[in-house]
Structures are given as structure tokens and as C-alpha cells.
Length: 524
Image (cartoon, rainbow, N blue to C red; front, side):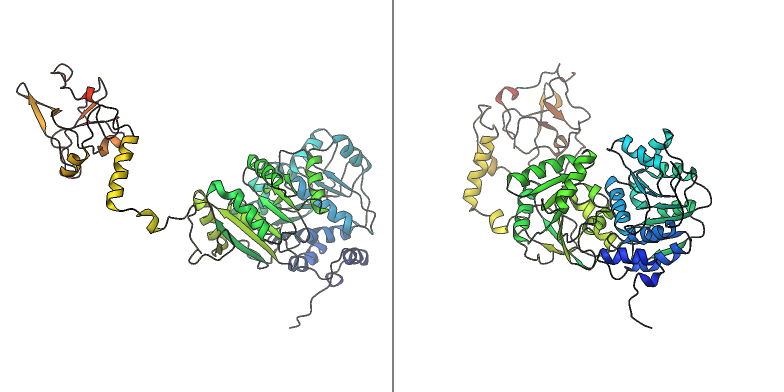
């Protein structure tokens, strides 16, 4: 069997398309392109699954341009439709059509939010061959009567798993119901979960399945690293890594939009040329951010997962997960922004003790441990596979430091600092130390009745009651003053009889509470 790699001409594409692809700097197709393009040219429905960064976009744009090169579009009736989950991905697809269709006369319209309706409507009125849209904006135009979908010959649903995550599937189902029954449908996704497979079965007719990589694998070209730190130290740790690494360009992912602004301002304040990108920004601002980044006017983008899909940034050297993603699959898409097209990349994930559950889910999904390093970049021995995080334990010598006499003196000072002197009673530490540990108090009789009050002529041992500490109320507690707690004689805690206990004042009892409890207060 020959190992000779195929060229784009071998896939059956026209000379005009091959020339445009060659001019763009591509010589050989990727595996997903090599497998999918021939079936698309044959008119078959295709169910494609490939991880991010493998060239899925070109696997449907190239044959679509070839198919649509013959024919002419009618006003408000596009001949093909591509649905994308985010504005950035839709804009990325439109750039691909502009680049690969340079030698054709095909027209295109991009319908995304944050842009004037008037400009989009004027393009629709002239007629377009290719319509690229996000679900919400497309339905807005349809309800205004500005677009008809009855002449669509080819439908592409891109990043279907992201559609599902973002809740767009009901909109997609409505859009598909407006299309002709006889059409060619191309369904692409980075992962193929059972839910995605069920949705694909609704839209596709006898599809050809094309899968080129396990849906839960990470690219081998990306070196992954895990750094454990305390939450309050995360920004310092990130800056240290950036300074240590040769960062040419980087995406820094945060889980929450509010954290993006905080981290962006922190980086700028420390002299880093960074910009920010998230879903709450206006579309012109988002496009301006991407333009600056691609033109090397900014070295880093602090972003949300809106940048985890579809952004084809050449030569991205690093990806930083400032937060471990709450959705494990997003980890694959985030780090897949680097190490693309055969190049190498580096990915660093900062984790704290609060991320244990998310980190464990990521490592289960990718079926391997992320190599752990410390803040200085040194490998951590035995650091693979641990799902915990956070600050390291103090050395034993530090924890147990101090002679017994010094420790005893420190305990006395600690009691005094908690208010043990405020009661006015003498602090008889030696007496307490001499007394047996956790000695049970003895109930005294008053007037021939044993009501469980403590012997007020003796000092309390100072041992807190475990039941009171847990917030539980004894069955026969005196609640009038909320001071004395009593337990039945048969209730024992750890071998002691806690017949009464004064709580709420630390380890010592104020003097004014050391008075006998009247019978009336005890219900007698």
C-alpha cells in the first residue's frame, strides 16, 4: 500500500479551487478533508467528527464552492446555508469562502448579531449563493420577511456539539423545518455524544460517517502542564509563567466574564500587551480585538469560551487555562487552539483545591493525567493524577516546632486572647492541667431534688461539648436564658456523662453565670 500523500487535485476539486488553495499556502489535505471532500462532491450527506484544529471548515467550504460554481442565486433566496453557533466562527467561515472562492464569482452574506440589519438586508436583496448565519439572527431576518429558505440546496451545521451546549438546537430544528426536504446536509462536530448522534439522525439521510480521531483525545502536538496554586496567588503564578515562557501569542481562558475584566486590567497594569474578548462585547469591539491580535498588535487575549471554537490563529504558541473549564470537553477545544497544522504548542492549566471535581472530569475525558509542574516550571514528583489542589502542607518541622513549655505558654496566651480573662474569675491553668482530662461534671442536689445543675463551687474543665458545637439542642435544655444545657443521665458522649454544660462564652464561664439556677427557672 502506497504512503504517497494525496493532493487537493486528487480529491476531484476543480482547477480554480486547487489554485486558490495553493495560493493560500496549503499543499496537502488534512485527514478529515481527504475523507470528506469526495463524498460531498458526490452529493452524499456527511456526518463528520474531528477534533478542533483539523481543518473541518475547509472540508465543506471547498466542495461547496465547486458545487455552487454553476448556477445563479435569486433575490432573498440563498442557494446554500451554513449555520454556526458563534459570531466568531461564522466570521471565520466567511473568511474561508472569501479566500478559497477568489477565482469564482460566488456571492456571500454573513448574518450575525451586533451588526446593522440594513447592510445585511441589502446583500440579501441582491441575492447570495452562500448564506452564513448564527441561528438567532437568521430567524430575525426570516420573521421580517427578508430571507426565504425554500431554494437551499446544501445545508451545513457546523460545531453541532457547541450548538447543543449553547441551547441553539430548538432554533436549528425550526430552521431545518423551513428548508426543502430534498437537499444535501453536512453535519460536523468536534465530539459525537449520544445526544448529537440523535440530532444528526433527524437531519441526515443515509449519511456517510467520517471520523478521523477519537472525539475525546487531545492533539499530540500540544505539551500540557498542570500548575497547582492558591486562589489568591493565581494572577502572580500566571505572570511568572508568561515571563518564563517564550510567549509569542496566547489565549488566556476564564470561566466567568467578570474575571476576564479583572485579569485583563491586572495584566495591562503589569505591562503586558493584552486585550479581552467575551460575549457581552459589541460585535465591532469583538472584531477589533481579533484584528489587533491577528495583526500582532496585542500578544495575549483574555477570553471566555467564545474563542474556544473556530478561531484559526496561525502560530498561536500558548494557551493558558486561568480556570479549569467546568465542561470537560471545553478543555480539548481550548488547548486545540494551539499546536495546529503540524506546529507545536504549549498549554498550562492553573488549578486550586476548588477545582478538584472539574479537573478529575477533564482527566477522565482525555484518559490520561496532565503532567504537573510547580510555579517555577519544575516537574512535581508524584504529581500526576491527583485531583486535589491548593496550598501545599507545611513542613512537619514547622508544624511541630517549639518546646513543650513554649507550646503550653502559647496556649495560655491564646486562651487569654479569646476573652478568657473577661469573666473576672482567676485563670487557674495549673489546676485545670492537674485535673483529669475530660472529667465528667457531677450533678448536685438542691432541696432533695436532682435537677442537674452544676456544682457552682468548682471551676468548669473548659472542654467544649461536642453536641453543642454541632448546633444540636438537648431534649431537656433550659431555653429561657439560653445558657444551661442539660442531658439525661443515660445520654453519654464518648464515655462521659454531659449532664450540663454552659456554652457560648469560649473556654471560660463568666462569674455572673456561676449562680445556682432557681427551681422556678427549672420548671420545678
